[in-house]
Image (cartoon, rainbow, N blue to C red; front, side, top):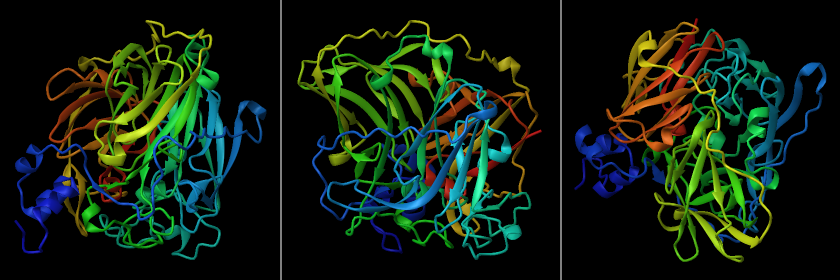
Length: 539
C-alpha cells in the first residue's frame, strides 16, 4: 500500500511514531495506537564495521576536581570544546564535549553544599547547560534561550537572540522573540544550591531547537549528590558503585557520529530528515562512551547508577548469566533518590532521561562466569548492552536494608489545589508536522502553566506514542497508570515518567524551591526540538 507520496506502509511503520503513521499512511490515531510499537523512532545504520560485543573495557568517568572550595561553595570550571576520541576500536570520532571527554567529567557533591560551575563555550554554536533533576534557581536552570554564545559568534545582536538559531524560523515557533532570554558571551556561571535528596543527576545541553543533535554529539555528563544518611546504609560503594550512562549512536563512513540533521552545522535550520521525525535511534549501544563494554567484578554486590541518555531509545533491561539464569535487579532508588524500601525486578524498563539505582549480586555466579545486561526491546546488535565478568571471590560487607529512607513526601490527592490535563501527541506546528502539548507547539513567550510556590497539584497526562515527560525543578510521585495503580518501577520520587503508546497517567507534585520560569517537556529529544515543550511559571 502506498500513498500519493510513494511512502510504503512498511517504511511508515518503521518511522515508529504516530507522526509518521498518521502523516505518511493516513491511519487514524486509534489504528496507529493499536499497534503499540516497542520503540518510537527510526534507526540509523552505521557505515563502518562494528566491534564484537564485550571486548572493550568499561571506562569510568573521571571525577572533576573543584578549582576552589572556599566560602562553603565548591567551584568548578568546564570548557565545552571539540575533541576526537576512539569510541570504536581503531576509529577516530569527532565529538562536542565537556572537558574533552564523552561522557563529560562527573561531579560529586554533598547535599546542601552549593556548587558553582563556570562553563566556557569554545564550540562553534551557542549552548545552554541544564542540570537534569536539579532543584535549581531559574537563572541557572538552563532555559533553552538562556544561551552562552561562542566568543567569535557573529549572529544577530545578543539582545535579539530568540532561539537556538538566532531568530530564524524555528520550525515550531516562527522565530518569535524571547524578551526574557538571558544571554552571555563565552562564559556563564551556573549555581546549584543542591538543597535536595541524594541522587544521580546529569547535565546536558538544552539549546532551543538543537538539544537532540548536541547531546548526540557528546554534550552530556553525570552529577552525583551524596549525603550522610545514604552513606550510613552500607550499600555497595567505592569500586563496587558504578555510574553507567547508556546511550545509542550510529557512525558514518569516516567514523563520525551519523545524525540526520537538516543543517549539519547546527547553526540555522533545526530538525531532522522526515523518516526520523519520531526520534533518532542508533545501532551501537554505548555505556560510558564505550561500545558494548565488559567490566571485571568480584563475586559480590554492586550498585549500578543507571542513566538512559539516549535521544529516543527505550530499554527493558535484564541481567542474564551464562546458561540463561536471570539475576535480580534490586531497585533502591529512582530519579530523585532512594525509595522507601527496595523493589526487586527481573525486567527494568528505562525511557530516555530516566535514572534507576539498582543493586545486583554476583556472589552466586561461578568464577569466570559472565552476566550480560540485555535490552529486551532491542533486536540484533541493539539487544546487547554490556557484560560483567566475575573474576574472583572477595569479602563483601555491603547490605541492602529493608528500609532505605523515611523522607519521601506524603502528598495526597486531597492536598491538590487543582488538577490539570495535558495531551502529548503529534500535531501541527508553524512549519508543518511536529509534536505538541495540549495542541500547542512551544513558544517561549507564552505562559502555559502558572503555579504558586508551595501548591500541590495533580497532573493527568496522556500520550499518543512513547513520551518520557520531564518536569524541571520538582520531583513527583506517580498516582496511577490507565486508572490502575502505578507499576513497580514507578516507586519513589521521579522527575521523568515514561508514557507508553495510548497511555494516560496521573502524577502529583508540590511546586516548591524557587520562583521563576521553568519547563516541562517530552525527553524524546527530537520531540522536544520539534515543539513538545511548555512553560511552567512558579510565582
